Length: 213
Image (cartoon, rainbow, N blue to C red):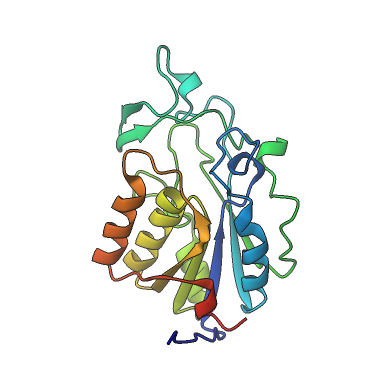
């Protein structure tokens, strides 16, 4: 029997990167990524506190394959902060691809965290850039509002959702990933690696049905 979770004022939903470029037809489409939008709309109604994240890259961003001569999308290069996967140009500031999906309906969302703003550093996590030292300010924002527990959903499960969940635990929030409200890319076994990493940190992957809808 599924234990039902009823969110309260100490809980927040973090809806990760529900943007056009990560949905079918976008520059870096996550397979069936658009399917999670309606689910997250429903889930958001359970939470007083909802945070949206938004990839927001300048043109010529370091993480774009087009910025590296002779490199292709999904190659890996060395960055000052470690290995960096190269991506197709995506979620470029002030483009339609960077905009939220048209079906997203969360009017009470209290904050939009834009990440990947700096040309030389990618940012998967809602909490830290990929150098693992530059904070976005989200942790402080949540603490000031008395948030103790976060639930994460969105795109992609094995990158931005994963890193956000890991950093939520790093910042001492209880964290759960609503897995059927996510979709993954699965590069080189990244979905399996995500399950392993989350389990090692005590971050459960739950179903949307576990939340009282």
